[in-house]
Image (cartoon, rainbow, N blue to C red; front, side, top):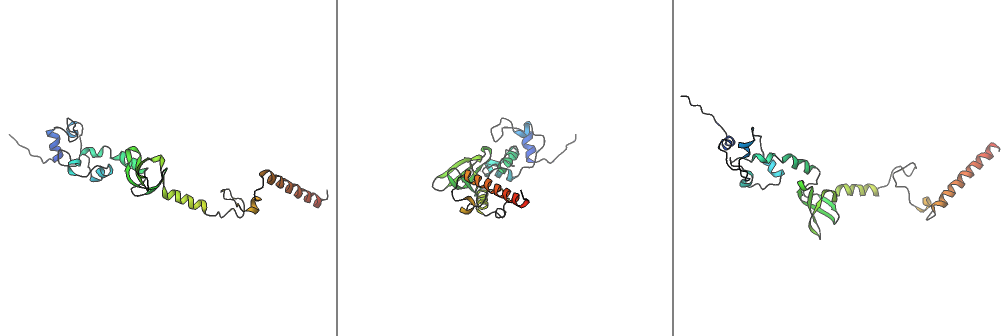
Length: 192
């Protein structure tokens, strides 16, 4: 008779023994459908907002739960489109600071002064720094409109340029009158 001893890890032991999973599943994932064990890190639990207490993140084998890897990619992708913690944002209720990110709901919890903690969906908020940059750009003068040919919408609005409250029709009529005068000057030079 021949005996063979092999060193196996705690996950392999849990797979062989079977039993109920920590989540309540009748049979453990490792003994049902997992054929290979992927490396699981504490970073995966942090990304999913799971409490880092040992009873919450360890499986029956005493190692980090294999299921932490299942939703990790979805959480990472969902967080890419949301503002980070402590970032300033503009909300329908005013300016506030992000205190919690809820990636699967595509929402954030924002502390708005005088309004308290309020949950907002992604489409309801705007990053404060982007809005502030746009405000600064809108208030800064344009380099090109002084010389003409600018289409940025920042044309001079002083009274000499706009005719101080004149009707648009009057301005158009003046322009045509000026064109006719220029044509008359040209006719005189040619001798017509």
